[in-house]
Image 1 (cartoon, helix red, strand yellow):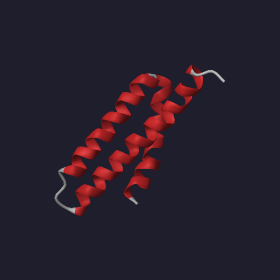
Image 2: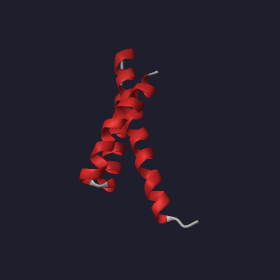
Image 3: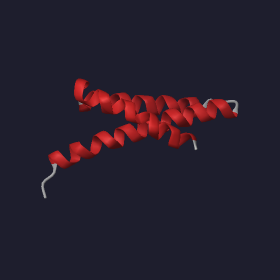
Image 4: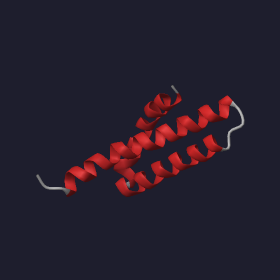
Amino acid sequence: MSVYIGLFISVGLMFFTDSLGRRFTIILSWGISTFGLFVLSASFNIYMASFGLILAGAGAAASSRVCMPILAETTEN
């Protein structure tokens, strides 16, 4: 359930794509995802684990949403 909450939070990261560029948005989203996985691995209760999963889901969903247009633009039919 926490990963799905992160999926909806990742919509906010998509607004950075136009202003900051796709590369920075990908780096930012993977940084958020990595930090969430570190929090998840270091968690000592269910609330920290949920917070880590929310961050991991937000970062991974934002990265996948940004990578698809890049792949579409750089590959040929």
